[in-house]
Image (cartoon, rainbow, N blue to C red):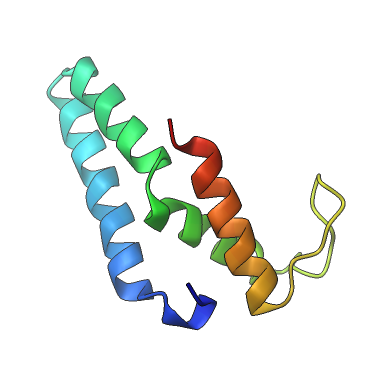
Length: 90
């Protein structure tokens, strides 16, 4: 996969829809559904991709993270997304 091949509109929509489902389940006091939807969101490729995009394009993007690394190239970013996503898979 390539960083530029990611369909960001779909990723953002997927994350937003998952957040809406979580909020609706919480509002209806369906804690089991909240946990299920949260787990689905955390384990999704879309959430990992959006998280990496957010932290690599914000004001502090030129500062190394807690791992001491700086992810600035598209190749580094997609490898980080894949690493995060693989780390959450069961």
